[in-house]
Amino acid sequence: MGNDNKNPLVKKADSLLKFNPQKKKELIVRGLKEIDIGEEPDQLKDAEYYFNQGRDYLHLEKYQEAVEAFKKVIKLDPTIVVAYYGLAVAYSNLYMNGEAVEACKQAIRIQPDEAFAYYCLGRSYHNLGMYREAIEVYRQAIGIQPDDEDACYHLGRSYHSLGMDREAIEAYRQAIRIQPDYADAYVSLGFSYFKLGMDREAIEAYKHTIRIRPNYRNAYYRLGVSYLFSGQRSKALEEYQKLKEIDPKLAEELFEQIYK
Image (cartoon, rainbow, N blue to C red; front, top):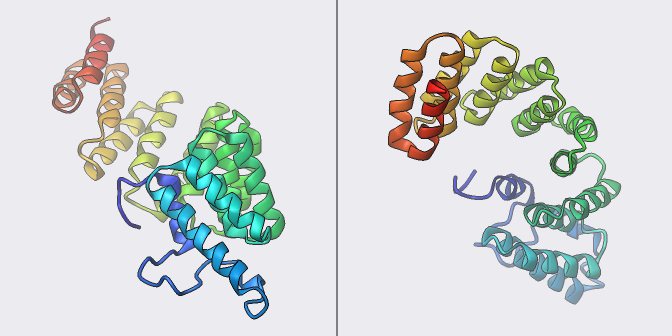
């Protein structure tokens, strides 16, 4: 899916927007087909130009500039649905979640069968602390695209935020069934197990996380805490020693947990 260092929401949007920088003349923007090319070539050309500019700004993490570019696309033609997706992603990265919600809702009004719009809306609702609303739209996203591991994972996060860890566990497990090497889902699964007092299951989830991503610092920390709560202080100390090589500051926090 591209550069692993890319912002996750931008990375996910890429799979929908399908920009190909090697084909400048090709119209790949879903929704542009609604413009009559024969009647409005200049408007179409300008819309494509500003849309591609907005995408480039997203990749450069220049989110305010991306907002302005996508707004220009929408001003030229408010039916270009992917401009609202880009706008929502930019707003989300600016922590302007209320504005992101409105952009997602407008996209849904234009194209109600696109899972990404519901997923992005769920992310914004979650960031606003509107967890029940987030759960509802994540479910809608999954209903449209059942194999969306990210929607399942973030559904789990919203369940967890409401203290519904059994439901969170099922959502995380579904994300892992879809993508078996989903490290974030494993570490979140472990934490929900831990919250339910299921220390053995939590330990296995954290160990699996580390097998997938050996430098996942939070997994070492959580694993150490789970060992501690299950009465295995010596193993907690082993995780402290490993974590000290990766993140000395977080390792110190684990050490304080062990000896408080």
